[in-house]
Length: 399
Image (cartoon, rainbow, N blue to C red; front, side, top):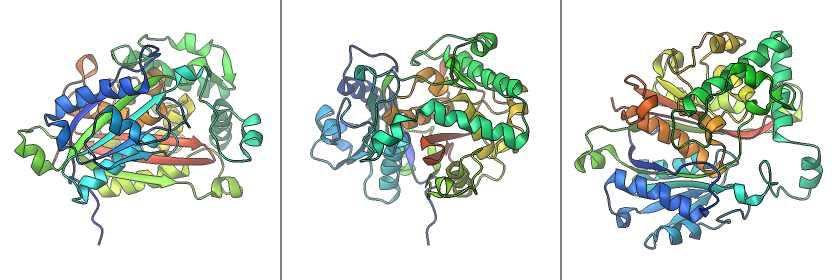
């Protein structure tokens, strides 16, 4: 009978490139930048890595579709390397591959690398994906801001929320993330932004303004994982272990009929419930020390607080305005600045979230360090509101 992966896998080392407009760097350069930090942190030789997973999402952008990009760039010695893609949750998917390989006993050391080089495309947002013969019809009248803005309308209708109240809460979410990102030297955007500036910014897709949308950037992040026993034998006395890692994909019901009201993410709720069960978390609002969520848009973060069962349904606005998710609040969210400040190089984002949790749990987060965090959750969402995938990862100190 399956018992889950709780405490079976330790993060031996992690690395992250600086995110931003890295015009002087190729995707391969960014992978090397992240890997150098990771392998030094892990304290092992590159030749000890027995399997690797690489995540990149967009077709033929930067490194292309082949896993050879990672094998050649890092000179990995004839080991299995797998290229992963699962929309914007691709980074979490690569991390899951490495974690499951160690948990299963298939290997002692596994690598997960996420990278995306989007600024060189010349496209203002995300490039168009090849989704088959219907793609031109679908994308001709669809944008990510437009699709996610509809969540706001559905949420307002369901809970009878005033337009101004919702926009101010979204502005508070963005301002909070910019305050945090200003303390992070690896973030793309490192400047605090006032709530009034956010409220008066140009509208992208009503009610989403410019500062309600995350940007596009270049970046890479990676992790090396092993068993807690091996980590200890290597002299690692302060460990971060994986408590849970759950993935949920839509079954199509959101778009098939009107049973879904468009105000929440079914996949997030499903993945969260399974992750809490696997990790033994009974009260996430009290048990978690921090959360990193997929804030592609500020409305997404607002809804996610309820989908992760951190705020009661219809109560996330109150929690946001009360400062509950601020750096000095009850449950800090996006303490590193989130997608709002890092941007969203798709293949890297999921691993970048785990990187922040790892730093915080080890007390290495510098100016943004929290006071003795014990348990951290990362939430990585991919696709559109009606057609998506969600990954929820929980990491923490060993019991």
